[in-house]
Image (cartoon, rainbow, N blue to C red; front, top):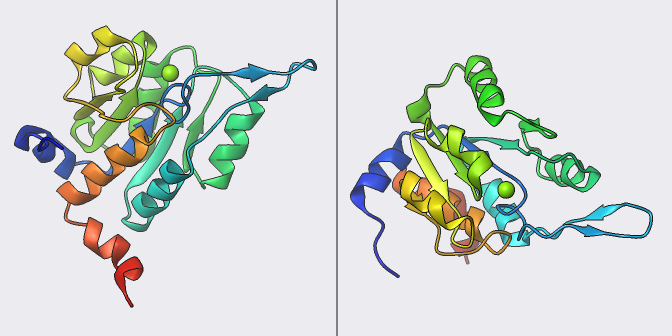
Length: 179
Ligand SMILES: [Mg+2]
């Protein structure tokens, strides 16, 4: 695996809040709709565990999703997501609201997105991340593009990057190495 550039690790070191888009980031972007109109989404259990590790390390977490779906709310509740916004038309407005709520600066926030609706926020944050199989043009506007796909470990990859850059990885995973 190629080494992550030091400029990316320098940015990752400052991050106190990780913000995620949902569809195409925590999922592969697919939405399954049944005959009654109920929506189904597929999440990755290793992304979920990564989120636990992130929380254990004291890094805050938020989701800003354009769509509103019950499945998304359930998953956010499962994972104790602190800042959860869905049905969002203007992601930048929500981003500014989160900044006011948390009193964090752009440099302390990372955002992961997969499509053009994420661009306004990606252009602001200290660490902007695009998804490997997302909208291709997004990659020229970010600091880092994941190697893994949306809903297939991309979020876990970003979390590992944050925790390793901040020297927190060993501490939050130590219990799994004890014999
Ligand atoms: Mg998306």
